Image (cartoon, rainbow, N blue to C red; front, side, top):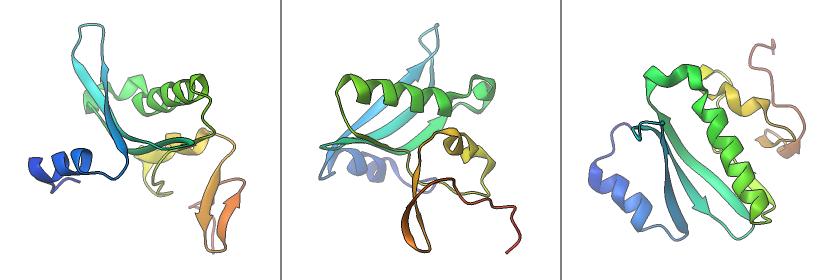
Length: 122
């Protein structure tokens, strides 16, 4: 995403085969501090990409975004919320592992249960 041009980003939102929405997160002064690109699917939401002001790290905006999406999905009686990619070794994605239950794609296909521990010796 870091190398995308404005045209690439715009095409990802406007030329999508699914209903796509960019959700803005603002502070009490109406300043943009984060955003989440979501796909509105038949039975749920898919959090495609989120980004946040690095100076607002203490706010846990990733967790806030997930809780907001969960609330919105429940109000619309949707069944699923896909949190997007999760990379075990990426500290900035750690918040995703705190939500349960989880279904993840592993070496044996889709699995329900705890996420793999990246620190476990193989």
